[in-house]
Amino acid sequence: MKYCRVGLHPMVADEWMPYSAMMNPEQPVQPAEFCLRRALADIKAFAKREPGQAMAAAVGAGLLINLLPTRLVAGTAAAAGAMLVRPILLSLGVTKLMELCCQKSPTHELS
Image (cartoon, rainbow, N blue to C red; front, side, top):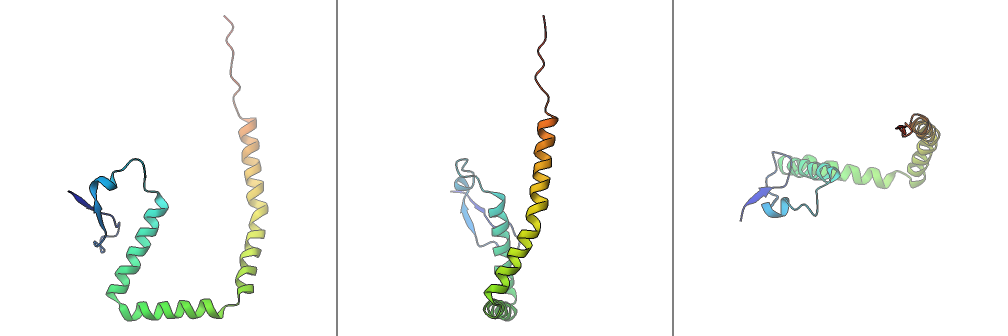
């Protein structure tokens, strides 16, 4: 049975799967999955290469998440979302209007 490498990062070669499973047309691999796999491969490679720095980064991220008030994080996300809703809806409306106005009507040829 042939095996192929699943990870997209050249530094990480520990994820292998059968070639037949990789070429399965019923379950295509999505681009978001590739990005996630690449990010996880980068994190694994960094943790293997620099275990002390990886531990310090994990502790720092954990402290930052626990120290930030939830209300601040949620309020910032809500304010940013509220600022973006109007321009996004306006651009979607203009796009739909242009699509409807510029749509070619079918021509009927008279014979």
